[in-house]
Image 1 (cartoon, rainbow, N blue to C red):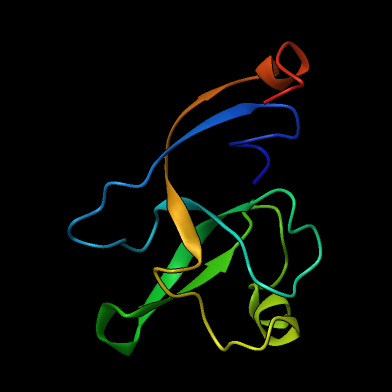
Image 2: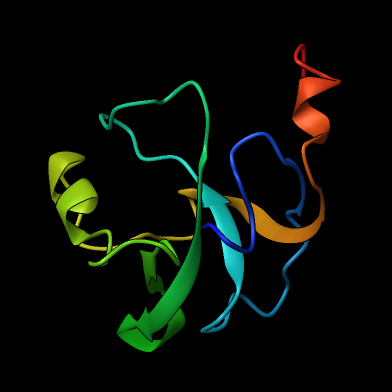
Length: 101
């Protein structure tokens, strides 16, 4: 997500989304069966598909979307169940101060 969010930034996520997510939202998500299950991936939603039931994401600094990661996890797109929430706030480089979080 660089240059918006960098490794070591502390990210605050809200999972309160009664209306769902929109294109452009930055979200934190986990994919079952994918690498790095111990920490969420933070990427931007680039498309809302299946009438709002699924989402396609991409990192701002990535050349391609996340479809390869989805395939590795056995899904074609993210669903609400994969998404922890929308990024609402960040503190640059603060994770170095709070390594236990």
